[in-house]
Image (cartoon, rainbow, N blue to C red; front, side, top):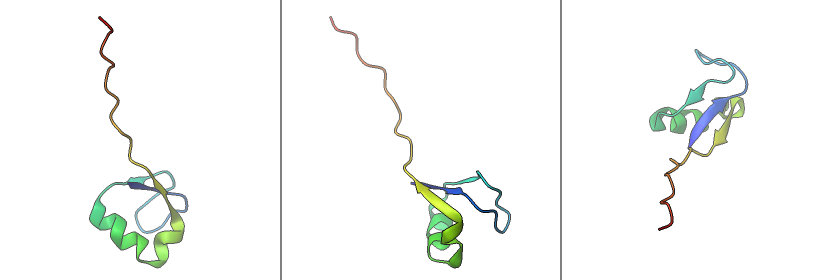
Length: 52
């Protein structure tokens, strides 16, 4: 999971992505949780194996 900033705060600007888990936990446990949205982390796409 990552966070995306929707309202600027501290050193973060709108659109910034926060991926550090320690920062995510800190932000979600504070008043600043209203300034971000949770976004599911992208799952790496693997190339499908060609049919034989």
